[in-house]
Image (tube, rainbow over all chains, first blue to last red; front, side, top):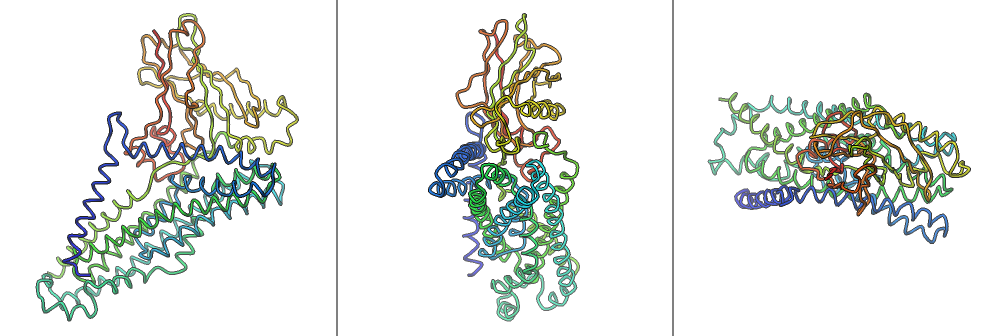
Length: 332
Length: 221
């Protein structure tokens, strides 16, 4: 699409977004914003679902597989609302998508797989500690906490890899800049004749931008990201699994946790889609603001590097806090 | 000329990076997620002069936490199993450095709390229940000072709220002239944003748990 056509569209979209944001942050008569009310509402729903979850589990114990679907459905819903909370996984995934990834399908797959991995890790930990080794529930909980630190460390590592990859490309490109500048002067966009010849290897077309964006995103980075986030078991899932174990309903617990993971995956996917769209919109804006492909590519790499830094710092901070924060007084 | 072009490019890139980061900050919804729930009941204990001397609390844990804490219920003989009492003792000991998750304020300033000596525990339809009394270091006169209290887990791992329509009880001299007003949590956007990124507890006053805590104002005539 032409940049001249897109510009007004972008302005309208941005203004609408600002309006919605302002509306959400506006304080009502009693001093609470719409957004903060929404927060409290989500908490209430989550609490009610969790309360029903215990009942549903007992129903499976009493009536067998006939009550299983109720448990599965409830677990799924609980997952949806549970994931609407802050978690380093969501911060990492949305930062990653916002700064590195432009494929919606890949973003959704990443979110779903990371959420499922968290559930599977919880199942494996509980099966290994309680099922296999016969450890106490508290020891199982402590093991799960140990995995958290590993996850944070891996997140920091993924961030570091992203920074290095982007920095290398940036360095390589900055070296080429003078050559391109000779070919096309600073005010080149005013010269109509310059357009066609320049667009054979750069310009406003999205093709080249796509290639630039996707180039450093390797399957290895994606797998690394899924593992780093997914190796941290959801502590809520661990507790549900332990309860199922105690009730002699191991399989009901596994089913509930998998349904929960799908639920969290759905919420995180929604967030991921938002991130991908935000990125796409920003890329379009970039295509209007910066009219040369090299500049756009440079901007993309700078953003990519900044994203890597955010992920690296988040991982490091979480690792540090995991180190210094003593175990929860009621879980010791 | 070439150098300045690069500088402009870098500036623009930086600006765009900022744009990305800003949208990123808004893209992260900042609702916290507790993993266990406690239904709270509280009684304000008054001395002979009608001053607040302690906050008596009842904590009713959710079923999942109960199973976790008791390592499966099957090993328990009955409600009066000595292991229940032992669990309550250990938990209260662990909670001591955290002020029993209780924060009492007089005119906005935090009040020092004493050590819990009196407690009781039981299982109530499959849920762990504690009752204990948190004494204040010095008595507070609710007619002179603005007395309020909050009970919350600073890490927000556990959500602690009074049940809907629950009333704050008062015990002691002049209890009938007193009323406890429960203000529901009202997390402001700014503070939640600050705490949003980390799902582990921070040390600051603005902990995640504090943002989602109820406040009870003690009003006596």
